[in-house]
Image (spheres, rainbow, N blue to C red):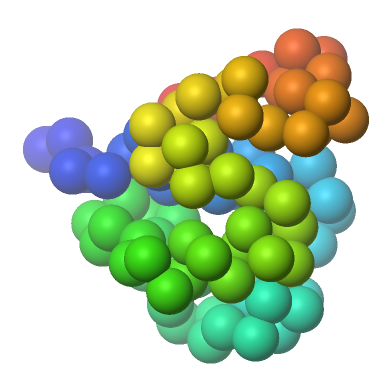
Length: 89
């Protein structure tokens, strides 16, 4: 069975891996709970607006990238990183 939010999940996992952070480190830095991040990364739960805004504020991820995968909404450094290391499904 496909995960309903696998696309969002893949983008979040890609970004965390790019930074070389554990789920706990990534979540704590954004003032989130690791369990929340785990739920989003497993693809069964959709990240809420408050969580997405926390990632935007902390890491510069745009809401358009998180929800829609719009790479043009990313800062140039992340856009270049995405071209160098594409998101794995």
